[in-house]
Image 1 (tube, rainbow, N blue to C red):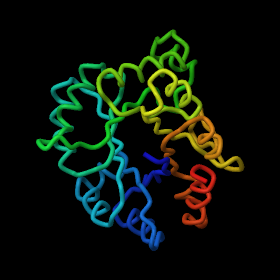
Image 2 (image 1 turned 45 degrees about the vertical axis):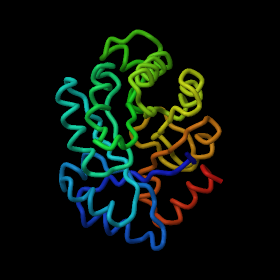
Image 3 (image 1 turned 45 degrees about the horizontal axis):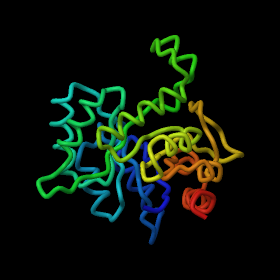
Image 4 (image 1 turned 90 degrees about the horizontal axis):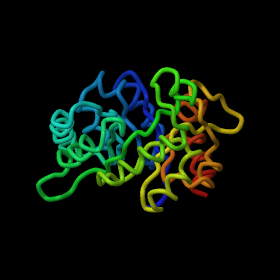
Amino acid sequence: MGKDVIIACDFPSKEATLGFLDKFTGRKPYVKIGMELFYSEGPAIVKEIKERGHQIFLDLKLHDIPNTVEKAMAALSKLDVDMCNLHAAGTKDMMEAALRGLTREDGSRPLLIAVTQLTSTSQERMQQELLIDAPLDEVVTKYAQNALSAGLDGVVCSPLEAGKIHEACGKNFLTVTPGVRFADGDKGDQVRVTTPEKAKELGSDYIVVGRPITKADDPVAAYERVCREFIG
């Protein structure tokens, strides 16, 4: 599976999203649909973007009791997305249930990845608010190992953790990494960030890039710059 750039389509409406995607004439970038767009437009927006020929990472970060997550994933698997996710903190039981729900009768399913710790979470917050005393790196690696043993395909993590996760879980275990900014760009609310070039060096398999592309004066040029720096 080659490296790819996923554009985070964090838009409030269908009109804004399709207007943005219309700029990419002849290109069909991999897109991420998150909570904002999914909750405002519902499953129909997923179907419409899929019909346009885009691969889709549906980023809803499920986290609930195993039975609920299994049923929710069964519903999501009908949308024919390419990748979806959940919170690794929901335990191995929950991740295994999610995988069962996601797998269709013919055995096919989207890729399933687990969020380790959000890239907005710092060591201090994790210790003071979540009462997790282990170092952030160790927590992320352990969550990734749990995801691997539950049969998942990979994790969402910071690019800074991608190498460690490949060491712990093997090179075929996917690392999908947000928290990517141009060297000359704004970090926004992310704490653990790096550049597309550095993410490539660190071993990220997919990078998820939002504002540096969606808010750019020329989004297509920004997307192509990210692809050049990350894929080469």
